[in-house]
Length: 116
Image 1 (spheres, rainbow, N blue to C red):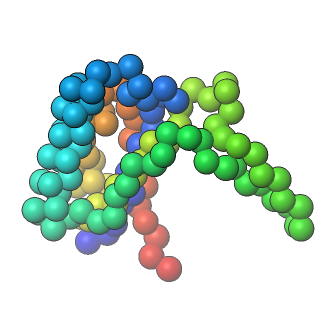
Image 2: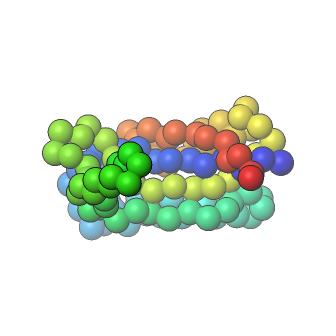
Image 3: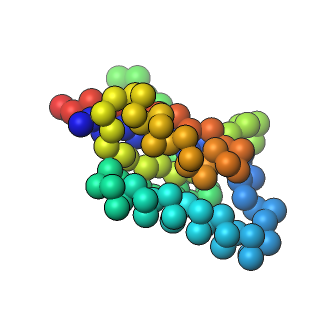
């Protein structure tokens, strides 16, 4: 079985316009999906990322540039991630098909982890 990372892309404003009650429903959907994956023994590390944009680092040789991210013109940010165990991309797609992030208009980038 291979590991796959689900990178959760969303609008920079994300879920900021939801009422507290609706936000609790959304959180419940994410927890339910993660619970199913956990029960099946397929869930690895997962976290929501803070809403602030973090730092973007670029470098070349000894030069290092650090800027606050994302830029104001960014159309999407990564809001969190999950690691799941799957028997290949087809299986990973099926496991991800009902992920709530897709239900709420987000985009999921699915990448196989390369064990080193």
